[in-house]
Length: 478
Ligand SMILES: Cc1cc2nc3c(=O)[nH]c(=O)nc-3n(C[C@H](O)[C@H](O)[C@H](O)COP(=O)(O)OP(=O)(O)OC[C@H]3O[C@@H](n4cnc5c(N)ncnc54)[C@H](O)[C@@H]3O)c2cc1C
Image (spheres, protein in one colour):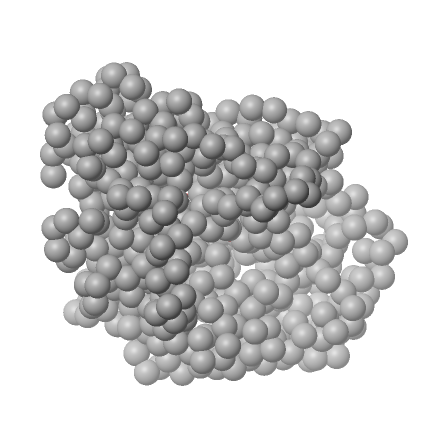
């Protein structure tokens, strides 16, 4: 779909000719995000460098009635950064660290700063940005804010919302506003995190104030090995009941272990039914005591082996196995679908049993990674896209898993958002009235629904929702 020529001319004037892409090959890169099951082709991609340029882009798109979507690194796993025929506002040139205030423990960043880059710059000062999604080598702070990203260390340190102090935003009509700030203000409503988790549907964050936390002086990383998944999940509860709040408490099951060992050689025993990767951090004395309590809890629940990383290299190898586990699946499958659901921690055993049963029902292999301490599951559903109905079976299986999460008192997503992927399911979690109020709030701020339309809420396209946004009728963004 071509853009109105006048709008294209305006966009070129705002950001410069070289920073507007409309070529077929250039646009192809933006057809997908991390959720590769969905695809949509934008009409144009613009690369602004400032809040002012974002504001002018928003004004121009709104005046032309053309939808537009902010995009960070495109690692999102729910199709949130896709645009069917609209303008993608690609924020990768807005990648400057504007200020670091070590004494007051905060930084001001542009949204396109890569998550890991921020901590690399602040660690020499003894500080870091705590949210650490496994995609942190690529994903941006803007994307983290929009998705309220989590990661292995959110059990102790909290998700992105716990680390955002303020933001400058551009609304769909181009208006600019700033909310929150580096220091607490006790009067009036607290809007410091108001854009967090809104998936790019309310405003574009163009400057973000983030909290920095001290790097822990001492860290111990451990691997507990199990011959039964139930013993591993029981250990999760036992560790917490022992009064330890680990920095990370991750579960990796057998199929995932096999992929990791094929590709990465992290040192996970391939005959294990599951392993727990556990990290405790803090002052040296406390860490030693907590590590002993963890070892006792794991052995008490039937761990067949228990290892403690002796060197930083050992520790990094274990984390490589966890953080790159999803990518390692490429060694055992042509494609996989990443599911993201939540159950109460006490229901981890139930949901994993259900997942294995659903795998058999749909004739699919499922590898599991869990932020176990948070009850956040990531079943990775392996399928062959060339097989008849391969993708459809994977999607049906994913939906069954999410419904099982809801039945167990959990939720549709722990950290990947709703996007286009789960908008057809959101009414299973929220009542019609709740959704109507949410829509009202959104349309109060995104009046013409031109900013990231078709995300989060059902569009009324029923089956089309989940089958891919290409199947929606033309103009479905309106
Ligand atoms: C291998 C892999 C591992 C992952 N692991 C994790 C994990 O451990 N934890 C986790 O939470 N997620 C994880 N993710 C998902 C993803 O990395 C996160 O959701 C991340 O926060 C997305 O950041 P991004 O910059 O790629 O955003 P994008 O994908 O570009 O965009 C995501 C959404 O944010 C919106 N957006 C982006 N920037 C802005 C902005 N400045 N203002 C307003 N809206 C904006 C977009 O419109 C879109 O709706 C993983 C993904 C992959 C591929």
